[in-house]
Length: 313
Image 1 (cartoon, one colour):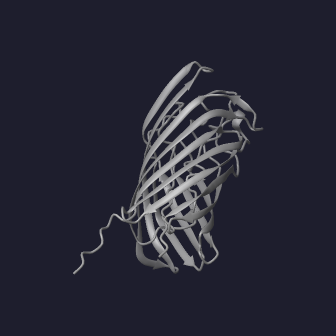
Image 2: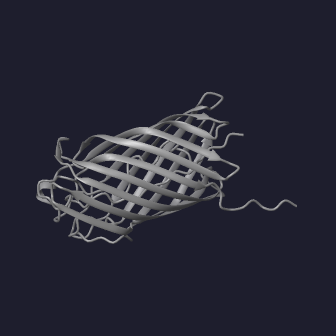
């Protein structure tokens, strides 16, 4: 029987404050909650019925700040470490023919900034903005699975607009996701997937509203070891669809939209005997404009079903 790890996780990670350490020449945009590359192989598939718990650490290293044209305007050394506790349940209930579920993520962020260019260092740590998805829908038809999700980020993390680094982003945000996973051929060994994530934000304190954002993630992999292992490559593209707005926007940032891309290898393994799933992914960013650039390492350990099976009679 084919069994795959079908839990994908959204991430709430704070990279930098809006104006990147308040530098007047830096043209970085307001960051969104979702991080490109947060999902990879089989990201268009939802988890089967059950109750799941995931520990999801993310380490993102920022080594450049890119201008609107992609030129490097600063070379900082920033490490962002986020530790997420994610819980998800897929019920036996059907909505529009889809399995229905919901999920929640509690992120803790610990950042440290050092850069000789500015002769400064700073730290910021604490609970970031909590994510809750009351609608997680998954369909399966032939070799294809489909996923549609709605969730939102609550500004539970500490935020100070005068600070360069904050655990939270300081605003509410809606997130809509839609994607699909296709298993190629009858053996279903080769697989490809695609997921789109749309972010729509409320205004932040200081009369600043981030523009809407779109992230597209894709993957291509092959399954091994009786379908318990999936290895391949994953990538993403991100684009802010319209500039940030509001009277609090730095005039140097007005009218600018940012973008980034990333790609790298991924390895997933599901052990049914242990009831555990493991996922490791590294992505290098490229073609970045008007935001920070670097690399990211994602890892997750998922308890496949926290609900023990009923005792045999």
